[in-house]
Length: 224
Image 1 (tube, rainbow, N blue to C red):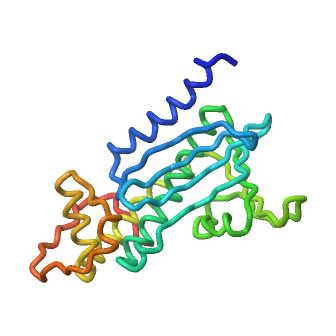
Image 2: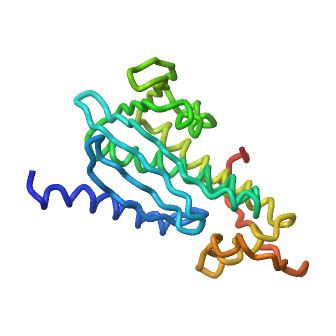
């Protein structure tokens, strides 16, 4: 394989993540790609929180194999704002799945098999309805969970619905949580607040902060 051939898939992936900036996401993302003996490693960075998700991909003749799904989080955000922390984790996992789905399409695969540690599989526990099957196995590397995902219209429709539900649910917290309110105000001004700089702040905003009305859309789904 030539150097130019190796660069092309990476560029496609990076361009795909860059395109997310045009979507109605709560957070923004960057992607780092690398090739290791374990496979292709995609590291998704959530810019405003410092959260990251490392995904190891191993193409095979039958399917796309995911051998790791490692989420690194910043617990300080949970202390600052539980709703923002929850939304950051959920959106990170959803976008990780979207990235994997894009890779599956890029490699011409419809089936994705996740062979993960129980801790890694826990990140997907709230999304069990997306998977065709989930089973436990004992391997030479220890206990693993096998989750099988089939790429179809239902998958993409469910993912789009869940992303909207996460945003809706977070929006409802802005009256009670000033950091949620301030964060949505920063989005409204096209500049997402860097939450990492707030963790060591002790100052509190005044009670007069304006609440932003959620835009009305007929296609909204029920909140999770």
